[in-house]
Image 1 (tube, rainbow, N blue to C red):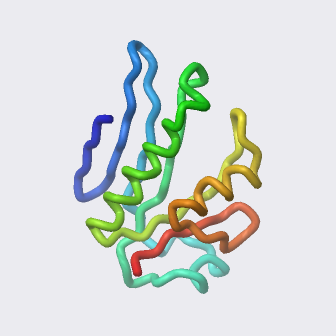
Image 2 (cartoon, rainbow, N blue to C red):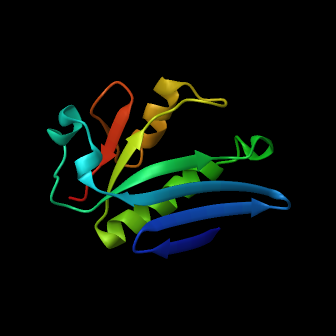
Length: 120
């Protein structure tokens, strides 16, 4: 597992030969959120957008997404980071399966396909 973080982002990646799987967060301003989302969040805190979780098709079913999400959660906890996530199902998992996966890492559903993970 390779980890890279800056004040504006975080990336966890898993490399298997020439194949790569990745989870990425990018810092955002809560000003970009729509009003219904703003009512659900703490706008004066630091927020990152979970922009990517991609597991190479040949590496799916091996727990790599779980490992990547674990690194994201650990980094967010250590740095007191809130995460916004717009779920976009593609690949092998449907919306319900993705919601279940992200929920295991502390994300809560606040809209049909929007989840957040807040620092406690």
